[in-house]
Image 1 (tube, one colour):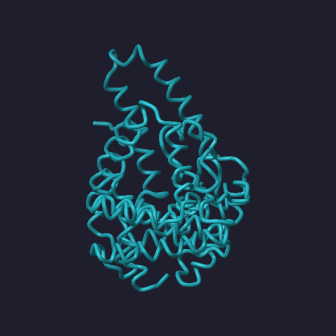
Image 2 (image 1 turned 120 degrees about the vertical axis):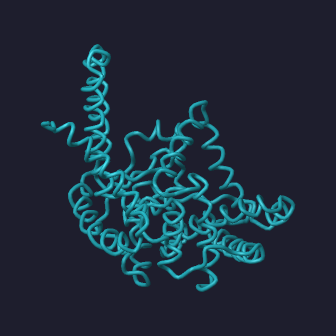
Image 3 (image 1 turned 30 degrees about the vertical axis):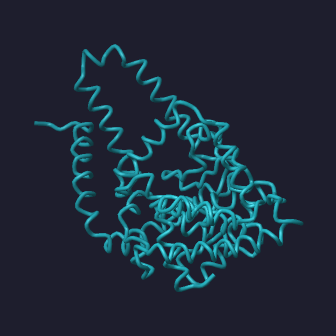
Length: 355
């Protein structure tokens, strides 16, 4: 029996799914030959190709892809019931190509060695370690905060445009690469998304386009969040697909920047995650610790909370659930909750590298 191109792509999709489910049990192989091999070449190639352009090529491709799909559905709606098999083959052929491109260009990074293993860190921590580290973070954050404002009740306002922040983020990675050469970030491909409005309503502050390797940041979020969000998306570009790992590396890049405003953004970012974990463990202890944080820092936290609350809508939980399912399907068993695992990385990293 003669196999058509669409049929071959359907078979290829099945082959890909089986192969990926086997490869995920060999993270050392992915780490050595993909994440630290082929991906480095592909990532730099894509960033050299698209990074210099002032607009997001990936967002434009998504736009044309969306228009094409809508047009295809309209033109083929009548034929869906008449020729279901052909319609199914069309869809699976497209999925097969997209699935292959996604994993080749970036997605295999989901199956690399966990960062705590490659950095020689523990994967857990005690309550005492968390409390001790949080107190040190509070002291560090308060000290930096007091250098940036005239008194501790005033929130910090970054004196930069969002474009200025983009121009500064690479310096933190340059400094970090002196200790970890594989985190050298060059060339840069960091842009504001043209879909910032819908992105905000969906509850997301940024994303990496896996097909063009462009790091996208929501252009509407407050400037205070721009350093950590930008560094987070760059961490994805450098091959760290897991959200908790991108959070951790993004935080390190932010605090390693010579700019004091970046350090403030990074340390308070880490502090917020630690406070959330303490609240889960002991709400009373959380309330006690909160009082030791400068009021100005708490005002910065409130600024971010007010921003997201102003865009809350009935569809946001649906988008979060969809993204949660996407993460779980890509080797992050805890889904969105995996974001909180930055705390384990932070506590154990700073046990070896004091603040």
